[in-house]
Length: 430
Image (cartoon, rainbow, N blue to C red):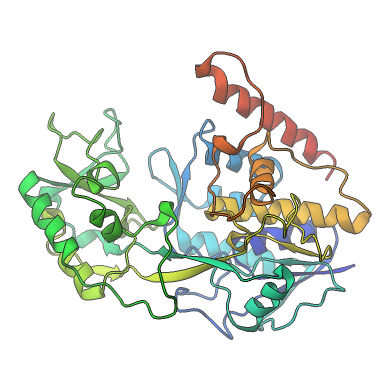
């Protein structure tokens, strides 16, 4: 039987892979390279636009649990991430080129998947379809999704951090250390600032020029992707409690006043991402501001930060807990456009949407993941009819629905053990 997936990002690639495993003839529509948004740099699938970090890999962290749930269900995205992992302390960071290329090769060489490189302008509701068009969706496809929703999209702005060359970092003013890790050199390059240096840096941010935004009346930011200049405008100490927090980064027994952290961005250790410095300052302003940091005074920025619009639907009352349109049951949605936020969350939604679509085609969705698993909790959250205006949501234990009356320090352990057991059982049936 033929099914369609629109978009070959993280969610779409994962969904196509899962459906192909079930024996469906998958038509995967991806408009690259015919039409490519300026935020994309390659023609590969599952391209990581922003950070190369998939965040914490700690099992007792919400996104760490989500990753393990995905591994249990044979996630293509997690297989690629584990294969192309690069050192990043307790986080799972990947070589973005190798990661995306591996996924692309797995998809194009799958005999059950046909890749169609063209822009989708109309959705055929007779064919079971997963829309994973991504948060940069625009044009006629955007109009089609709006038709399915019966109301306008919501939107927010996301930002990309600069990437710098390692060889241009001044290591007389920098050191390796992962936060709170005193035993190992660490995976992050730390660029400390004194109080006087931070004040000069802060003044440069406050007076820096931003790129003008013309296509919306106001700018809406998801807190997890707040541009660092917007954080700075909230107050002098906001950065000191955010991306420039010095706690746990003491060096030679001294805690700096502030720290700019750099995280490895490729496997050959030549490029580093400026952690938490997503921005939409002008390129000239980015150069000026970063060079206020002593270790970065001669830094070579190989990719400047940019802003791009992220589109998502107001999914409660439009989509059910299976990522299925309530009024258009042959159509499912996945990825950030569904209201989840983050790389891992997007891929997980594609995985779960594919499992649900497969069951729907077979007659009914008999097996599901409840909100006592991270994957199920996300699906329940974005479809919660009590939410009047959805804000994109990362994986977190706050959306779990599982009664627990034991010791507080055992709560996450209980959540994790329960969730993994349920996902393992679910995997036996789907």
